[in-house]
Image 1: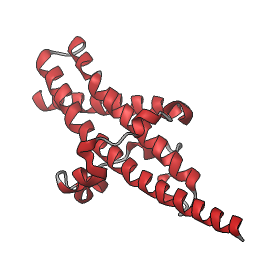
Image 2: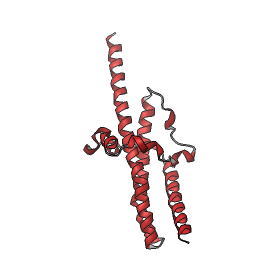
Image 3: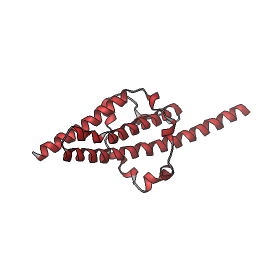
Image 4: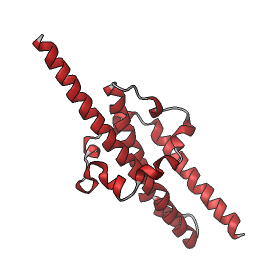
Length: 166
């Protein structure tokens, strides 16, 4: 009985996450283009925090990407190397994903209204454990992509200045 209940609630947690993810995927990207979310915090040290303390490069690709199961939305697998628009879109998509995962954690205490206390506690803890690494991945990727955008903008600016001189 215990394992049946455990599996039932794990499936429920995954289902809630998938439904919320699907709903957020339907919201237009422009809603998530929030400049404040692009802020890099001091402790992140331009991504070094994630690499040095969390060893994110060792495990980030092992986390399943549920966005792939929706078969629509932004395809980040093939970003054109010098296309600034695609990088900007990727940044916005990391914001969308981060907000989704944060909200899944924030609203997880609602499980206390629907299921027994012990199982609700399990659901809240599981939500934090499952979503926190995803938030870290989104922040880390956003920092990396913003560095690429900055380099491309400088490169484009330099080449346009050279063209004006000629």
